Image (cartoon, rainbow, N blue to C red; front, side):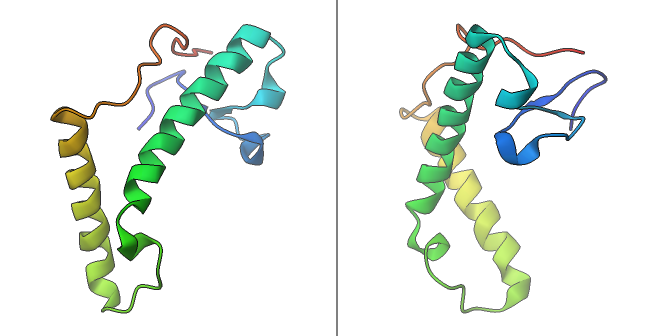
Length: 99
């Protein structure tokens, strides 16, 4: 959930979305570099999710349990981050974008 004036960092697929800052919506090279690092950090999380084979293959169980399975994977990934396998920091590169 975004607070008043907050925006998300997104790729070019979100051009024109008023809640997203994309590479096309800023001309500052330093801001674009920070956005690239933030997106790379998110891709690291996505890669960790994909380590669970269930996300790489067709889901063949009841549809009602799909959300529970994904929530479990998210929790396990969060526990991994909190217990010795943290993500790389982006604090020094990216500061919140306010409008």
